[in-house]
Length: 90
Image (tube, rainbow, N blue to C red; front, side, top):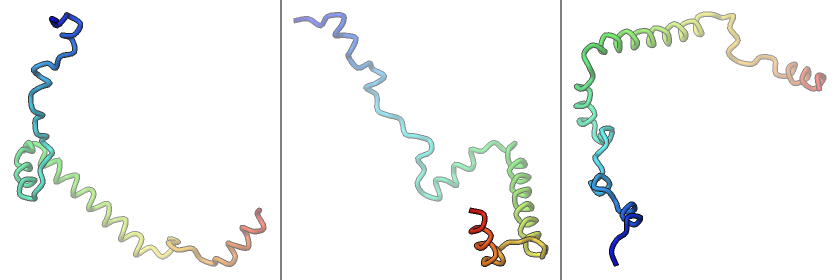
């Protein structure tokens, strides 16, 4: 019996029979990941420095504000009054 045209449609193509290529993100060791940093375009390095500085400055500024400003309520105070008011409300 010869393969008919309809049966030939279900044969795997040559592209499907090739092995699966390795993914680019499959680096496992630290040295492999550091080697991949060389592939970053040099034009993006100043942008990375500016973004890193902005994030660091924002974290520092927020932390300093929370530590030095004594009017900010960081913890709940007077829990007895809060629970009493909660009971009256419901």
